[in-house]
Image 1 (spheres, rainbow, N blue to C red):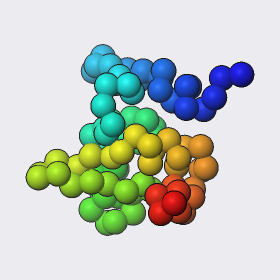
Image 2 (cartoon, helix red, strand yellow):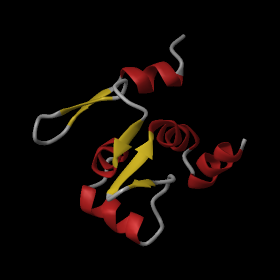
Image 3 (tube, rainbow, N blue to C red):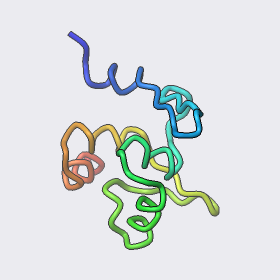
Length: 90
């Protein structure tokens, strides 16, 4: 049986411009890459972040916003922001 982690780790998304997002390359994604995973436009992701409503925690490193893949995975598996946030505390 394939686990959800294996499915998430082996997934490669192709953006509209033809670039690949390798889900195994690093521990975080840019806000735009996270938007692709969530199926929303990057401007929507930016607006949600500015309003403090992005569904998973966003790390601000300098001027860059990054999303930890583990938080994104937990959100996708649980389907709610509350579940992703509660997993963070454990």
